[in-house]
Length: 152
Image 1 (cartoon, one colour):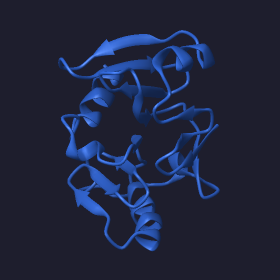
Image 2 (spheres, helix red, strand yellow; image 1 turned 90 degrees about the vertical axis):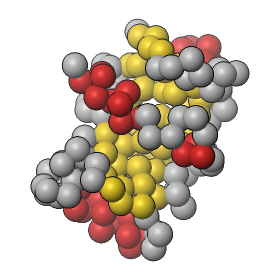
Image 3 (tube, helix red, strand yellow; image 1 turned 180 degrees about the vertical axis):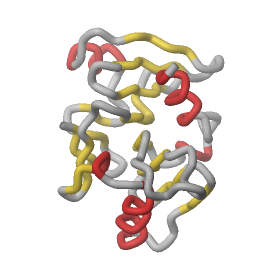
Image 4 (cartoon, one colour; image 1 turned 90 degrees about the horizontal axis):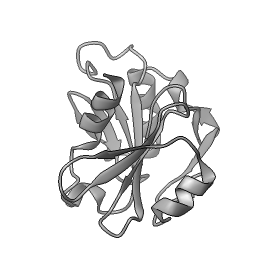
């Protein structure tokens, strides 16, 4: 189980943690590269990928099944996209919504569901947590592409 602490990390994985430290916590990683300035290690058996900056520090975690992700005592993968929206809207009045899901910059959490606008009752497919400024950087809007590539 991964318990989210906004802008800190999830359980044993903290933002800024070095790649080698993470690899000691988990085993069986698969290195992945997306562009020249970003790389990711995937742990598909756990349902998590970690995005690193150019100094090998963790800057984002993307969760997908079979991960169990908890925020404020709620198992987020048990929520539909619309339930995720209701939860986050009750906590953050400034959530950003687009056709693929929603993002709370207050908590550093995003929810991905590719058909969010058409079918909001589908389950959330991926959850990202990120460092402050993540979406202001060169990594902006790339996390869902990484998730999609893992599913293929």
